[in-house]
Image (cartoon, rainbow, N blue to C red; front, side, top):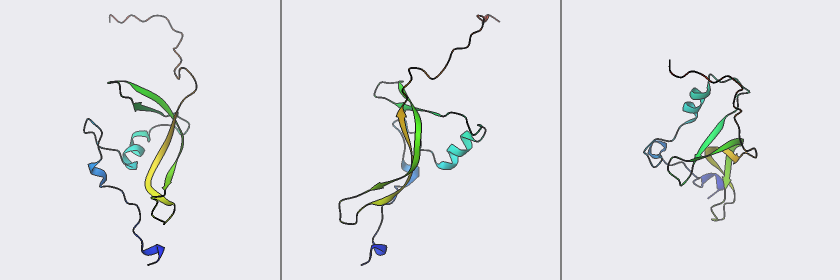
Length: 108
């Protein structure tokens, strides 16, 4: 049996992948549609859920691509079919700057 005949890593049926609230995992097409209106230089922030209910860590995207895995079965490294965004916590304390403006009248 050659390496070309050996089964490779596959993705579980994507429609079965959900979060704890039952929300389905997005596809590339859904992400592409969601950001289609943004200019090319628009920053994107990732809110990563934490163990605390309703809390999240803000992370920045620093890379993207297909990872690699070695299952330890003697076939070595192989490309993972899932495309991933690599995120890290940013180093600045805040990412938003409050505008200097007069206090608004919210009673209207």
